[in-house]
Length: 339
Image (cartoon, rainbow, N blue to C red; front, side, top):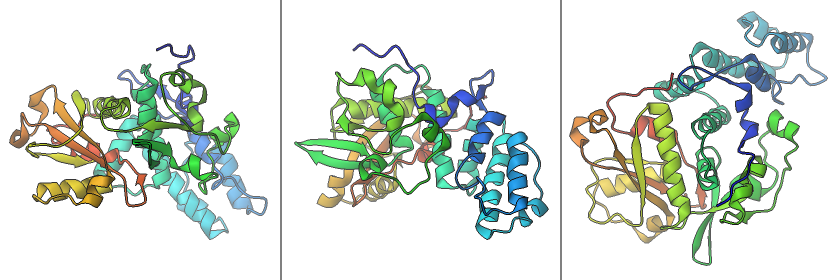
């Protein structure tokens, strides 16, 4: 396959605004923090009070500036006060950790309350870092499942995943300032990735208008397995191989991880020895076998046994992959972050 000479992708995640430490982890910069200040929720409207306008201007000039409770209390609008409290708590968490990766892991492990939008943005930029040297457009497209819900459609015997927001038209979610600056259209035509159009993925990667074939035995699920390998290796410093399966036959389910809420429910049913009904089987999208290259990192009770990963869509045919389940659900002894 001939790939594009321009290998940059996912510019909207803001990876070009971040620095990297010696271990390859992402370091928050003032420029990256300013992007959050440009969000519609924090940009003071014309009717905003003087206290809010003053705070916004001060943080644009000095994004790490300490903000007191009194500074927030002085803002007249209650919704604005809440938005600032949420954003500043998130900012403080980012700059209080050595890397963006460490900040994300701490959120997941301690169950820190953070808006889902912010979590997805962290996943987006961390994956961009983990996949920096990836030259396979199929893997990059598959990795979009980590931070963007997919609408599943059965078409001519193929199971196709398309970006839910893209096919639904204009999203109610405020557009990222970076997306606005890049001039990405709100709607775009959908094409299924194939060997002919895959090399052009880099040119329009931020439009999220390429669908992916996730039919069992085809390249899409193999690509998703490779993306999972990168995610686990980058965040947890654990080397693993992830192989898509077409069926779970006579497998000893020693350990499993649901890659989404529905996948977890299916895994629980199988663990309890239940037979999957027809509806549950229809919702199953992918089944993977994860094996660790170094068995010493695995908990003793499952050492030598594979881990099964279960991916499924909900009853509305929407697939919402939860990458945090790979952080919290794998049976490994140590949880190391890239530093």
